[in-house]
Length: 286
Length: 258
Image 1 (cartoon, each protein chain N blue to C red):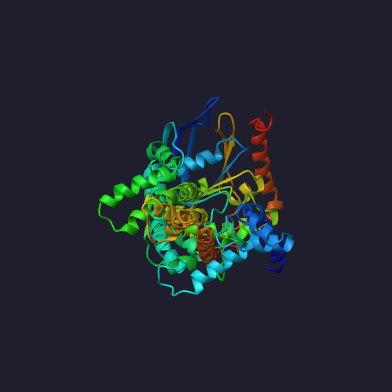
Image 2 (cartoon, rainbow over the protein chains, first blue to last red; image 1 turned 135 degrees about the vertical axis):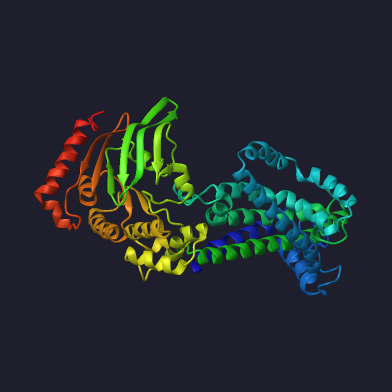
């Protein structure tokens, strides 16, 4: 752990330094007259570049302060709280992730068991991912909105659409990972397809599943945010981004982005822990 | 009266490859009686594994007839007539030793699971290792688990495809002796594929010598050694005489020349 800490800190520090430096030219359009009026000099340049009230690029400590103000300094269940907005987005992320995960697994199981499905279904699965999500999200949301489903499912459908794909690809590979000998073994027992799936293919595919889920959960969050954009949602991380860009409030955008990134990292971390625990119970070499 | 457990008549099997059909087996005639220990020996490509897999209904012969326990090979497989031991242990890495032996019992829905598992692990001298996972065992121990697994549902016929081929000679000697004891106690019919002459002579009641291109049987040798065999028997003249005949057969098959 200690050995890992140094490189991580070094990279983090380098990013922060570059960020602070970038603030100077990025905000120049706003700050140049103010710096000149204050008499110029390095101290004034830094002071104005890093503390502009409505900056083009906010400095790290401004973003940190904005996060503090909107996460810790307000009541959590109000419209001003990022926690509230994060929860709105996260709940549809999770619904979409679970639906997408299940859909991905079901598709993979069908593809592995039916040779014709691989040829007939796989092209559609791949084609679905070549369409830019920004193009299809408004249509999906309008169409699903007419069905009278609860809003959360409408939003979650975008996450589902994005995150079934890595699961399908990973699980097809995982379900096919048992070697010929293990498959022959099941044949000598006259095991039926369900038994082979349950006792051989599914356990063997678990490492592949976790790898796919980690990719999926992160893009499920992206999907949920994208789904909030065309609906003109009033709550959620996407709504914060939209709102921030309407009013030129970059601080709000950056704070929302960081909180979303943190949430994604936490979900990936949770999945890694779950993976470790389940592989340990399956007798993996420590 | 003993009856033929395996009966092959004029059996042929060819594979379609990119360079045209390959005759893996040609005009195979073989009878295996109940309680016999048969070794199939020959160089790589002689079809010994293919013949074993045909008996197990893992390959389908293209001509001739083959019966196992008086029925077609497929019917025998569906009736779970045999236990199969592969070249590698093929254990499921996420299952403990005990659960690996349990696997066929779960699939076949048999009762007395705990009793069968402990009896068969005792048979391969692996009691006390029930909770271990495959990676914690040596190669020889893993292969013994796979033998216990093949015996778990008590098939009368045991098909073994070079089970000790990947092990070193010291371990192999030991397992050969254990296999003989196991065979004497369980009275199984065994078909054993090997490319080791001493192993074949030491274990078998009958040795079937095969030759490649096309895969065929060139000699069947009855091994008239006493059924109680210790490793020292390999120094006796009777043993060496049989080993010599196997070697001469293999040589006459031009098996290593082309």
